[in-house]
Length: 205
Image (cartoon, rainbow, N blue to C red):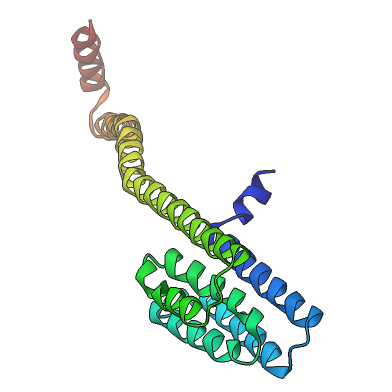
């Protein structure tokens, strides 16, 4: 369940929305009497959508090219006006909704306004806004996690060091004491050994 949720990302939703839009546009082309210009438009929009998904730094202004392609195709295939929903979605996702203004101009100039078109453009704008908001929330959560992680690691490291260092110091002290005792025992005679032993015995009392 968690792995499936991790696969559903804003980038994946963007790609799915673009593929759905081009699929619906392709269905309109197959069901109508359009010529090859419809197929060219569908392939162009699909390629542009995949490029924006693959290359994260794809220039935002390229949505103007998508709208220009739809405007050119509208002369021969009126249903290509629905392809304008794709650049509207991409413009809103990029945080530059003003780049979608040519869509309004084209639809008005060509007299292509209708209820289905208005619904498609509104759906594209709302979907783009939702995906953008989702992506920004995820980025903020990642920044907070990255900012908190070094503090946790540093605190854990110092805590472990405080526990380990006294134990190591005590072991080294015991080892030096044992070596010193052996050296003294070898260098001194029996009388001196007995005297040193008594002195150390009473020193520990």
